[in-house]
Image (cartoon, rainbow, N blue to C red; front, side):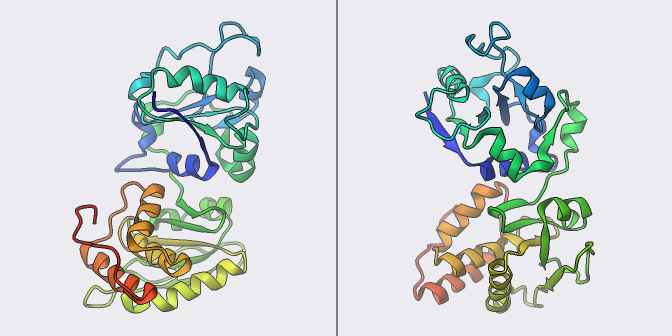
Length: 297
């Protein structure tokens, strides 16, 4: 048994927004999101793609049943939520169902901290009444930018930066454009500040790190949400986000890399950007700590 852990809403949000060529939600063994609330609450609204956990009878006191249409032992992410459980010490329905699944799962069972109440308050745009999804619907699911610092800093791609709905839902007010092209890609109902960060002819972003980190910091301190985006949201934007985490938290390059990797699983800055980040780590931390010759980089 891999155990049971308490997971934060931001972790579920990022799990829902992972992509390769298509949304990872279309992969049968990627995510099982279980809603263990009573039927009427589930039907009223639930988190997108959530399936209702079944009991022997429609009664809150009845035992849960193991899902028959899901290979639990193969699923990478299993997230369970009830109304508002915020501790594994409780014996609420989320913990009860997690204990049932834990017996057969090869991965930790995640109980959502704060349950549906907290997640729906933080991400109301991910509530739905939809129960069934066709494979093509999941393939084409509109992923949102991943959340680097909850409620503050986001990282995405060009398409997401152009979406008026995404800007409105996430309340984005400031954009850092790391695409090769300049220009204003989104004009919101309220003024939106944009910083275009061009790549120099020699491929460097390093010369912009100081100004960009100060720019981001200034707006986050004003409680303005910031979206950093590049063409694909995998390399250039990742480079800037890692640079900012090193600047903000004095993290090593390795720790900042792992923190972003946890938010965006397929992130991969180009090699020249990794070398520039190593130089930035040395400048901020006064020493070079991370060995970028390791295969992880």
